Image (cartoon, rainbow, N blue to C red; front, side):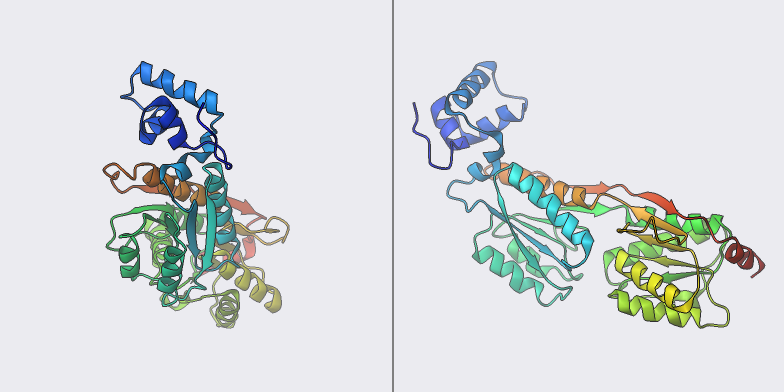
Length: 345
């Protein structure tokens, strides 16, 4: 019998005992076509004899690899990125990887150094939420390890990515406010250079066009990077003589800043926004939130990365784009007074 290593048998151990390659072992365990029945029987016999566990697949495929993958997010204080990281970790653990986490703090100029540091620590692959639209440093990283992007698409890169239905979610949430009778909806958005900011504005605009209403440019605020900026922008909008009758916010931090401004001003306007958040269902405000599984973004990104690692000695698969669906969740009743006012405008 082949001796087991201290950390348990690897896919290479199974392959040696079955007299096949590690890639053939991987194909058998994934029930891939093109493997003879005799080979399958040898592999399963070796798995049984060694007590091999499937969750060591990805780590075993890279002989001498570190068993680590790197994750770079833009703001770990944002619950969205915490959930995404948990999704990555869940799949990484399943396949025998450890995860190294770095936070760019939304500083695009900081991101290349974080990427280089993770590569210096010999990670076998990277999952990155880009902090900006310039991604040349990621192209350089791809010469060393596979890279998968999350939440934002590649710009000039041929690589996998996992996105949210940003346009669709924003359009559906805005459509709910319009259906309630609101025609003066303020838009509170993150920087327009970000993919999410641009796509969610596009969805906001499309919902208006579908009902023949043009958004009021004086009610659009972009470039909001945190809840404090969103609070200030909302208070300024509420101070206008012809203030908005509803608000659309492009992420949870902006929604929270807007809600704080409403509380301070004593106003009760309906709020629509991306990202569900804790206690949203008990605030007593009319909320329309775009909800989705942030953990699933991380899980999907990890699966794409590990799939590339499993095909390391083959021609790489074509780049793939996975989209995580959204759904609209409504809390509280629409404000009929504000809806009546919007109809009179």
